[in-house]
Each structure stands twice: as C-alpha cells, then as structure tokens.
Length: 176
Image 1 (cartoon, rainbow, N blue to C red):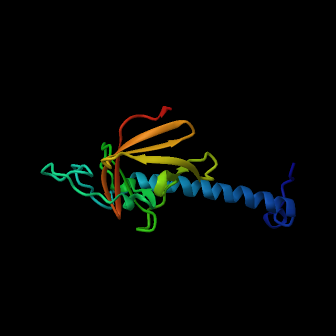
Image 2: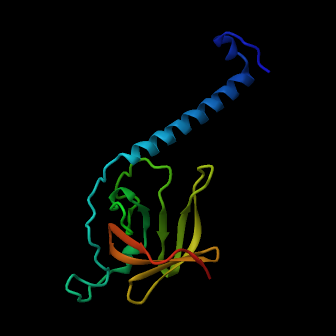
Image 3: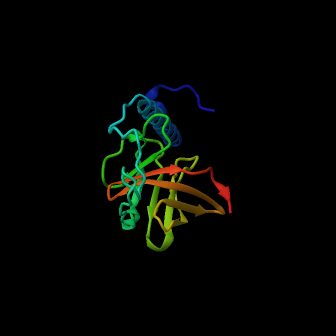
C-alpha cells in the first residue's frame, strides 16, 4: 500500500510512475471514447440520403440497368451518418473516399473477386480486426450473401457504384 506523499515524491518512485501513467492513459482513452460516442448522437447527417431507394438492377421505370460488379471489389466502410433514421438501408463508402467522423466501431468489408472477402470484427477490448469470409452475388446482381463461421447473412443490393454501396438486410443471420 502506498503511503501519502507529496505529488513530486509520488512520481519519483518508478513503479508508481508506470502504474499511474498506465491508469491515467486508460482513463483518458475511456473518456475520449465516451465523448466521441456522445458527440455522434447529436451530430446531424453529413449527407442527405434519398428517401426512396432504387434497386440496383432496375431504373425508376422498371427497365433493367447495368451494374458493374467490379465496383464491389474494394474496401467498404459503413457511413451511418448518411442513413435515414428508422431506415433499413445500410450505406457504405470506399475507405479512402472520405474522412469518417470518430466512432468506436464502423462495420467494414473488403470484397475481392472470386468470392473472397473480409469483415471487420467488433472486439470487446477495442482491438478490432478483420476476419476472413466468403461472398456470393446472385446472377441478377441483386442479392449479396456473406458467410463466415457457419453463419450467413443476405443483403439486397439497393445501389452499387464506384463510390456508394447501399445494402438492405434480408433476414437475420442463420446457421448453414
């Protein structure tokens, strides 16, 4: 147990200095994370997303529209600030396309040709990392299925361009 000592004497003990700085750094990081989350709650959307989504494979008149599936093969980061409150569409932007506001966690995917992909994993100790997965896109380029660890999730591709990916979840994750 530490004895009460004046402030300068407290930092003259190397063991106390390491312990004190470590605890102080953890406290500062926790405070920063809480403030970041709090400020995000009151931030207005940076971009207004359209109220009505348009399917990736059709135009407003119902005719077929060409979608370049190669636009999918990049690193996508979820831009929740652009999403409509209460909406189901998840909006993703290319990772290098903008400076995203601070957030404790942002879902991200890295899609590659031939079904390879990675998804960002939320870690309880904030050591987020990418895990491997596989993806398939339906023949009409409307449904994206992502599978990992015996579970799969399906999304309807609402929009796919070189700088925007809008997905709507079709169902909750289920076991294969």
